[in-house]
Length: 420
Image (cartoon, rainbow, N blue to C red; front, top):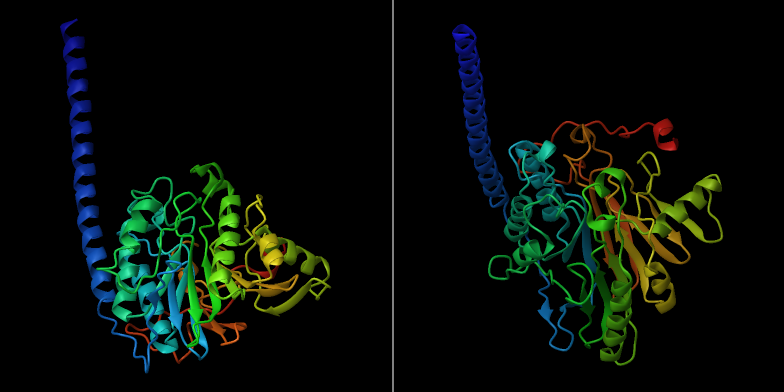
């Protein structure tokens, strides 16, 4: 009996030793990852602060309009907007190199294009732990905000589904506080928006002429993230959209701006992350007609590169597009989310446009593909009309601080995969 008791004690001690060693290994690895994480974030923040300032001949400086509380640019010339989307800065130890690539790309495009305003249609941060190596979504936001401040360009972010995941350390209120810090980020024009309206960052930026007439209103919407705010929403692709009270906010704010504008309703553009359901409707009708124009659809440019449903919009619809038709103000809608889609299409008289993405991180192997990476340039004329076009990052005109990576210009998915 004594022998059996001793054997049991020996086994117990061995198990205890194994557990202690395992815990020590975990503690050591956690410490190493934490140190690497801090070093990596600091390295990319330092790189972002070293890219140099954008050289403008005459940079437009917005002012806060006391009547409506929105930032307003004043100009009698064309107003140039750069749309960036899905930058996907991981901000963790696993994404250090790819974050550096994203910083490099954004800096090169901004410095060459010299836009009056950069609008980022969501997913600035990508704190997905098994790809970024962190749950900290603030680090990616800080790296990007620091980059834009270094570049000296005015910019306006809207939220995507990845900016504040359910498992992220910080929620939309926290990140909104960061973007609203005017002492640290004076070039960021983000506004949290009306607290009684769903989402964070529903706001307007106006453009007016020297006579004081508002010629263009740029509407930023939070298209929210996942239905039921659940973690599984990102797994099952149950995406949310702009809610009903946000639609009402759009109509009421447009009416207020129109009244301020002497009863003249300005033209407007809308920016958010997740494509509206009407984009899926338009594409499916276009595809069903053998990719030829219909009475409601006119193809402008670009292509669809996602597979499966191709347009990963919400199944919900609270009438945002219908309100655009009803008011007659909004001529164009810009979004991202589906990184491989770049199509611009006229649907029922309103132009629906996917922006070129920056993403190096989210899709496995995407850093080796370049056809989808770049920006979208939107030129708004003094009479309020606009046009837009795509610019690929790998053109020679975009001179980078670090050398550009080698990529293939093949499509990420084959035609067969896209067709399903």
